[in-house]
Amino acid sequence: MTHFPRLRVGLPSFQAASIRFRGATQRSKKPKYPQVKAAGFAVTTQPYNPGREVYPTVGIHIHYPGPMTSRTLRIAILAGLGAVSLSGCDVKIDRFPDNRLYGLVVARRDASDVPPDLGDVETVVKDLFGTPDDPLVCDAAAPLLNRDLLMRAAGPVASDQAGVHVGLYREHCAACHGVEGGGTGPAAALLNPYPRDFRPGVFKFKSTGRSDKPTHSDLTGLLHRGIPGTAMPSFATVSDEDLESLIQYLIYLSMRGETERKLIDRIMSDDLTLESLGAVGREIAAEVAASWQTAEQRVVDVPKSPVITLVITDGKSNWWEDDALVAKGRELFHGPLANCASCHGPSGDGNATTLDFDDWTKEYTTKLGISPSDRDAMKPMRLAGALRPRQTLPRRLQWSVFHGDSGDEALYRRLVTGIAGSPMPGLLVQDKVGGVGVTPEDVWAIIAFIRSLY
Picture 1 (spheres, one colour):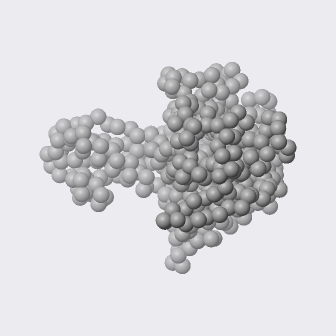
Picture 2 (cartoon, one colour; picture 1 turned 180 degrees about the vertical axis):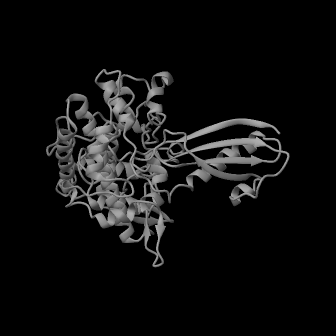
Picture 3 (spheres, helix red, strand yellow; picture 1 turned 45 degrees about the vertical axis):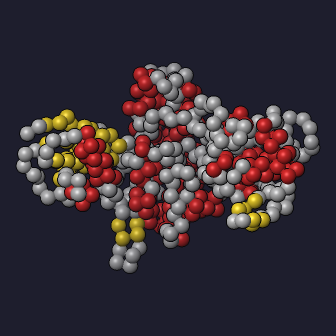
């Protein structure tokens, strides 16, 4: 019998797997997984818990009767990861993982060699927000959240005889976003771009200002559309009630995570008892809830757009036929006021030379003076749960694939507010021509030019 090295695959915040590859002269028990059986593998599972993981995990042992070639090794790895990603959704989870990564970031930011003890923070956050299986609605969140809907989304995946589903978040979202909404679920490392981390309370695609929370309709539209060009799918086939449960749970995770982060900031700057930290936690939760409640009042107004015509000629659709408007937009696109070409390239192909990262990555790299390419300096961050830094690339406008809504009003808002959490800045809009900004008419001209690219 030939033994192969044991491979430990860490899946942050949700699952971990122990995978053993070995060749054998005798075929093992009948495979449980059809897709693996077709490749000639036998897969067995057993409880696996090395002691540090928060959640119950599964050990995946893959047996292959014969020489292990590079091809069969690759299949084995994929089979093991697939088996793990399908396991654990019906497992009870009695606590959220603490945000060790942000604790380390705060310690480094404050020039401390010792990360904070997050035990008291976890206690306060649990008193306010409960657990993954039993979420609580604190007083400040009562106007926003409905506990019955939260319970539909929380907990293990199950359904009753009437077809009512529970555990919706773990069924639809946790594999990518993680149980705590940190964007480090089992599939996260395989996706580009990475799934969103809800905990900082920063959302990219919305109708509100750059630093504001999204409205309820923003989240509903995003889940209906999905995010084209990414792994985020559309949930248009999910029932309205289930969709509302998921939206409520998303807001809940974001509120919980933002409160936790701000509490970590406080324990690093103030010497607080558990009782006083609890009072601070309630104040922070109220502030976070207020930012969500006022989102509807912070929608960015969009002035009336020029007349848009759609002409069908030989099966082709031509938008924005006004040549003068397109020409003006082209000039602004390449000029110093908008300067879109510096990132998106002169022809909008996104091929300009850039080297930048999103705010989630910068938080644990460049803002701490750490180069994203310095593997040794990054190691403590990776061990604390950070994903490998990945460069943010400008959108290739010629493809007409926009991550957010591609409607006229959405594009206008994206140009004037920028994209929160990304290097995409907003334009300075002014009423009069001249100066250092652009007028609303200029913004529409840029949109006309962008539409003319595809």
